[in-house]
Image (cartoon, rainbow, N blue to C red; front, side, top):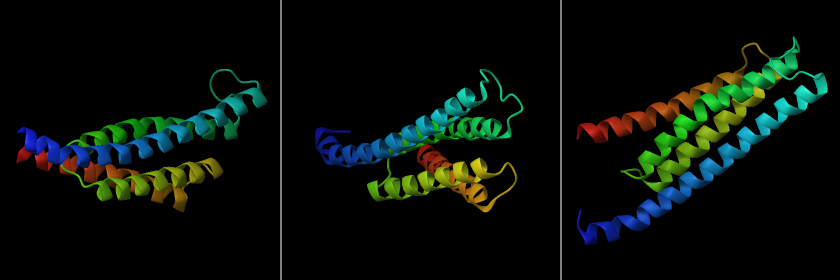
Length: 143
């Protein structure tokens, strides 16, 4: 890549990184909120490790764990995509879908350990965004 190409792509990459930044910031705040719920319930139930047979604490732990299981990998996919070929609008749109999906999943699982529509939509949104980003990166690697 020559200097002219770098100069052309620099503003695009900057905008992409700003978009990834707000996705990262909101996802991080979400994880902090979920961790805080676990801490509050641990204090309330005086349970240091595990869930102590408290269903509300068990659900809160699972909600937090699920977020920690899926959010970091997706954020890495967003970052690499932002540094390669994606348009900022695409990153923002996928980021919004991802974040709404994570909120729906957390809300659905927090209310009930059984199946729920918010939980289903949340996981489909999460997996959909992950698959779209992964496929884009695979296509880029092949070409």
